[in-house]
Amino acid sequence: NSRTELDAVGNDIHIWPVLVQEKIEGYEVDLSAFYQNAELVFFSYSTIKGESRGKFSPSSLRLYSQLGTIDPAIFDEMRRLGRAIGAHGFVNVSAIQGDDGHRYFFEADMRPTTWVNAPRFFGDDPAIRISRYFSHCEAMAGPGPVRPKFPDQILIPYFSRIRLWEFATNRYRSWSYLPDTDTFIVVFSVVNEKIKNMTRALVKPLVPDRLWQNLKRAYDKTVRKFMG
Image 1 (tube, rainbow, N blue to C red):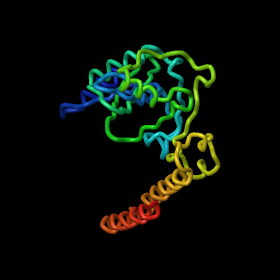
Image 2: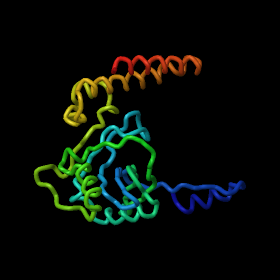
Image 3: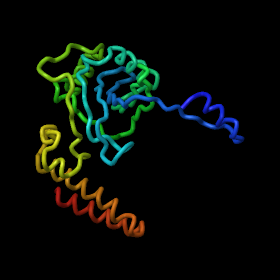
């Protein structure tokens, strides 16, 4: 909590080196971006409003902001970040917006993880920007204008991570944010994921690992056969 407390702890530690982590007061910001050869093509700005399984679990509810309404300095920070790490492709960037006014970037996840096209619901489809880049090498230059036809901020759930009853009752208007695909497939995918998560939590700890792997393979095979 303070330098004085840190110094006091140091006097009692005799095994070095020791890594001490400073707590940054603020809130988490997600900056899901798309880069090509370290050039910024697109990113979205959202804050985390809900987690799927409690604190520090994957986010299930985010408050997105139009890019025209955020701090313009973020665009330069995202460009410099991409060049520093040689970003290429989809990158989930995370930062803490500190109460002291500074942004602290702590993660740029380039693994093949979930990447949601939420901005298309408020008039800023990344697919269009990505197409422009491949057609005309047009990288992101700045925030652009605020779109008056859309709200400055919009609360969007990630439909496969919210609770099953929340999806069934259309909480957070979750049905409005489904992908443009067959509705049955989407609903089945959501229910299937919920069943797998519940079974993993309740059954997996009670059975031997080998049996669990066999059950998992049999279930996945049945689902694939059902889906054709």
